[in-house]
Image (cartoon, helix red, strand yellow):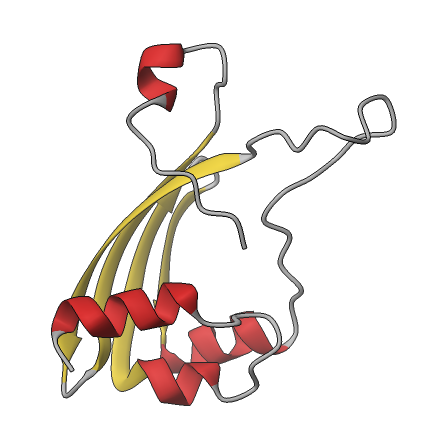
Length: 113
């Protein structure tokens, strides 16, 4: 499997409901360097396991006022190094979404999970 295929398979997987997701996709020596609006976080393999084990993730949201609207909450960009067919080293940047900037919004690919 090529590096592109590994990354694509990870993002197309059932992240929340697959208990084997971390050992299946992440190298035992993996690191994720994550810069977000909350600051910098460095996650190793055990941290990534804990992140997916005890946490439910919401990718979209609705409000009482607009129950049929799913506003974009954040944008993510991640570069992955793949080693031995698994995600080895990632550099991720995330920021809160600003739907008012139409030019910026067009630069992101929409992914519905």
